[in-house]
Length: 440
Image (cartoon, rainbow, N blue to C red; front, side, top):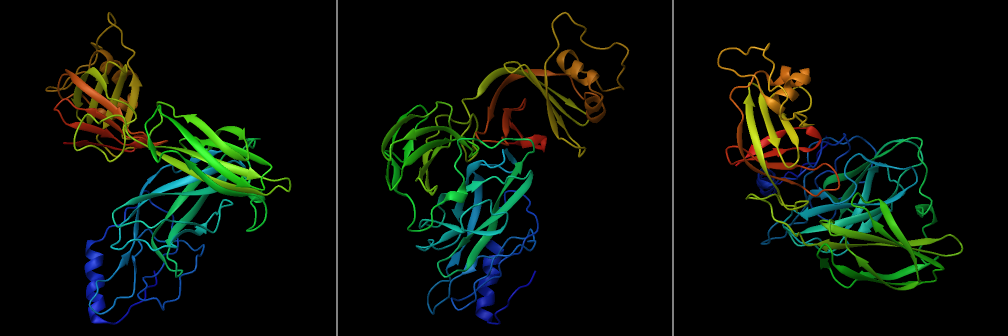
């Protein structure tokens, strides 16, 4: 990685202190891409986007020009979560969608007026060069949305986006959108495409698009209002939690629309308004309403996100093995298997198929001294799945009953599972069976 050094002792001390204290969250390992260089002062040349691979190391924050007697201003941002379109979301070819990132101002200064979320490298997905970002105070978060279109050719597509100051310099580690376009799919017939987007001063204009509230509760009815100019057709779409276009309505050029939020919606509900004319030009606007979380987690300290529902309260059993744990949850009729090794998936879940009156164990299997053969539902899963028995080994104790709580995060995809354990702590099962941990 190329770096530029400014040989000024006082500045080097400031940079060293910043480097020791900052952290930049990175949601997933990223393919290698170019990293903007650290810039000091407004006379530096802006870094140009490239398609060269970029290292996983985090990008140094952008520093404003220090002046005598004033503290250095650090511009930085950190990824918080994917509000829509989680990594590797599968989309049909040609489908328009809205990608929304939630990011935090992790610097020391408010972002300036004119700050933009700019395309950096990779697959642009018919997106704009940039979208404007509001002034955000240090420590605060903001949702940034970009209208994109899935390519016509099957494959995996990744586009990188980054924050850009009004002077053209970028800061922070680029975030990305990654989608999978599968083969043998048809384009959604009701989806407008980005190719007809109007040039400035040409075609229809959406003058405003807003709701009567900024926040709402699941189940509330909200009123959307819009005003367009020179539009001959206007379509209102509701966004699915994944960011894909969902239900839609053909509406008047200017008007209002009452929408009842689904009781099961969480985090936010989003809409896209498309205004078109007879020449095929399209203008579009996106609107998100924050949803207040209606439920509490069953434990504290709780995750910094909303659970998908109240906790499932259930009788349960837990048994420990040489290399893992089994957990039975009666209300779900499920058996969770947690592996304590590095061999592939780290946890699996099975239906509890054992019924009263069936054999509880296999008398031909004799465990070593000090160990046990699992019985009933645990035993059936253990005996019928050789990968389970070989990875877990023999039971180290007998199963014990207790009461548990189970809750899930409410992301559109890749959710965590939280479950009260036998010892009163909490099991956290990571998405895609990628891992697990026990939290106090």
